[in-house]
Image 1 (cartoon, rainbow, N blue to C red):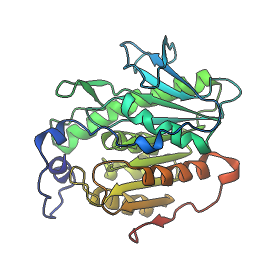
Image 2 (cartoon, helix red, strand yellow):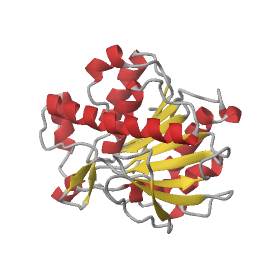
Image 3 (cartoon, one colour):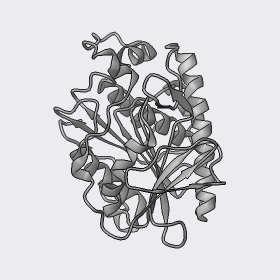
Length: 299
């Protein structure tokens, strides 16, 4: 993927030494045992299934059919839908992974967001190499093909977001998007163009696809946080730096965290930073407290 996204943006910088081929075909499982401590407040994990069965939740969730999400299977974590839910955070997994991986961060995020329902969809395409899911096929490296792919993924994700919010009785702005790697690219592309825009977008190890069309298609500035490991050799950190520059030029309030010694992973420290960002964006008590800041290495 490092070579892939170098081709997308036509970077002239020296490519990093490639990682083993398996790294490009399948995202690593999130190494987050420390964030799986029991969350504060009663949380009920629930799995929903669309047109195809989703993976079984590691938390022992029960399967049910969700009429509101016919295209994408999902796993949920949080309060049951009803008056207890004030907003929904959508968690988008990486390439070749599944909702089962990204949902692991929900219990830790929920400690500051007790009224938030977390919904992790499985990407719409099957990844044969890993028996996982993709948001879009990246085998064609041309910018046009990748933009077409992420637009298709955005359409499916946007439809799921609308359906989940409608079923929960929430306004269509009452959400945030969180993504990792290819999921971060999809969340960023979707959220920046969504009508109405979400309340926040949090991207781990992602990139901004099709920045040239953003000014004409964006639906208004909204808080964005970009998090990237400086040792990432799969999607190098300069993609988040490029995204930061492009978003700031369009007056988006951007917060960044460039984590030293972190590779193409998510660890407890960056989950903690993301949790604080979501709290500021989604809760009244957190509103207005430090949006647009940069953290770590002067980023």
